[in-house]
View 1 (tube, rainbow, N blue to C red):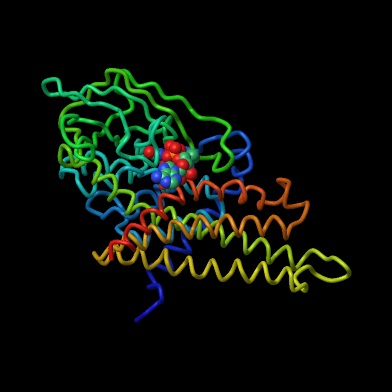
View 2 (cartoon, rainbow, N blue to C red; view 1 turned 120 degrees about the vertical axis):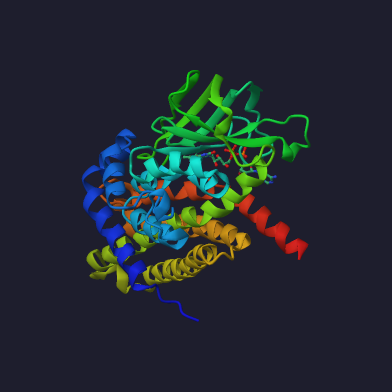
Length: 380
Ligand SMILES: Cc1cc2nc3c(=O)[nH]c(=O)nc-3n(C[C@H](O)[C@H](O)[C@H](O)COP(=O)(O)OP(=O)(O)OC[C@H]3O[C@@H](n4cnc5c(N)ncnc54)[C@H](O)[C@@H]3O)c2cc1C
């Protein structure tokens, strides 16, 4: 048994952290305040091999697998989770194309994403159904060699900046509920698409989020990804796969909270001594550190098992659940340790606090993770 990262993985980790340290701070505050997406950082990240890095080299990626993606995500999120998301979610949705797409689809969509020439989005959630993934209503009807798509998608990351969406549509309404869906790639320049940026997010405000409506949007039949009627199962597999990346966001964010808190506890004095001398402060730091290390174990192992071809999706759900819990706990403790200064934007911890909450909501709410894990436990 060996818990050490390889030299290659350590180098990747360092490179991603250095990239974030150099590129993020100059734009971080403004991107957060103005809810401003930063395409220039996405392009630079692609030049450095950080976009779609998990994708094999034959399709333009760096071939570092899901452990590599987790390390990149962790390090970017350690500096700014919103800006980091722009990079790691720049290939969001491509997982479905990689696992289920044809050779032609992989070359057509994955290669330009890795090169930073295109941004993708996974458009699944709808205004009336999020957790209930079999409740989506977007409909695709076949008309000759085209699919005609009507419906609405909600809260889509990269929604207004994406060049294409991997969407979940009902194609076979006559089938049983879970067999009605298929995944279809919709280029964003197709006629009939309206994209509306959602403003006023609590956190990850540098990330673009949008509502999208499709009105008689036509795409060629070749844009279907995988088998007709298999979309629901493909989507579940997609979530299973991407949860380690989302969990790695929580790991990076919680580490940032711990680092900022240790720094502050050394500098700030009260009653004539540094805050860090007080056992109550140490208790908070200790609890943060224990949670960070247990989360690291879950995230790395989950990602590594996927790369080994032995995925454990219950573990992925645990990692994602624990990431939300750890990030929210760590951000809360970090604000407390910073006292009143933690509540204003002179220090980054108020942003960490706002950013953390999304980890208990997207890519499956914490309740959805609990349900997934609970179901498996009861079926054993
Ligand atoms: C910033 C942001 C970015 C996002 N990015 C994307 C994206 O790129 N692509 C995409 O497709 N989606 C995206 N989402 C959507 C996100 O995944 C959903 O918001 C999430 O899955 C929850 O769905 P919902 O909002 O419809 O809540 P609901 O499903 O309505 O849930 C509301 C509450 O009820 C609980 N609940 C629901 N069902 C049950 C049950 N059976 N038992 C117990 N409790 C239950 C939930 O846990 C939650 O607490 C994003 C969301 C946000 C906010």
